Length: 248
Image (tube, rainbow, N blue to C red; front, side, top):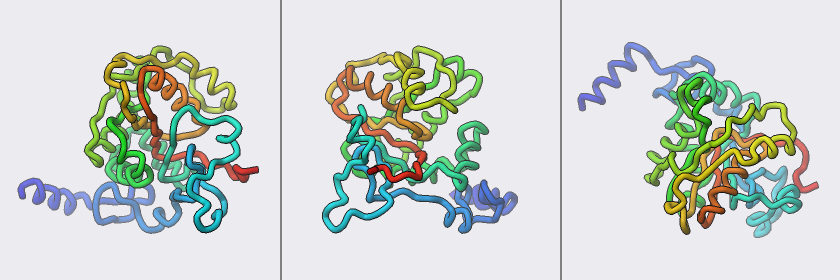
């Protein structure tokens, strides 16, 4: 009751506002209706592997289990990848505010979106692991945004959290602006496993902030599976959605 009264007092003194538009909202971390309507939420029909949404429905009884062209040509190392929203002009502001600006007021909302998008995958998972930062970048940034998302998702789902199993052994340059092949080369041998015994036969949810080409999560998945993980499901807050038809 004391906590509830304190929250009401704080809301009266500092009314909660949408972190994007500044419009008053009902509780901290929520976004206003106009921002909500502008978000591109992702849902089926999508690629059964990478989660890339298809631009059309496949017909009754056909859409489930369909795989996009890129995944047919080069199957991903991970078992599935899911994200609740597209990374675009509507979502970029608050994602970058969280990733680079340290804004954590939407973490609870993010975790709920992620849990919904990956409900089937989370239902069979044993633990949640974040994509790690190199220690030098962690010191300069002061936090790991993937670990914050992973912890929030653990609180939302009740799954165990472990940030010590997977580590980044090499400080890699930024992936921004690199081609798919360059991103994969950049991630080569970037990660290591510190406790393989905890992975044997486990189904892992691997959490990152934004899925672009999959190079980072693929490098992590390779190490997790080499160390005994049975399945790896990638869950990110957002993903880049190409405008071209992925089945062409």
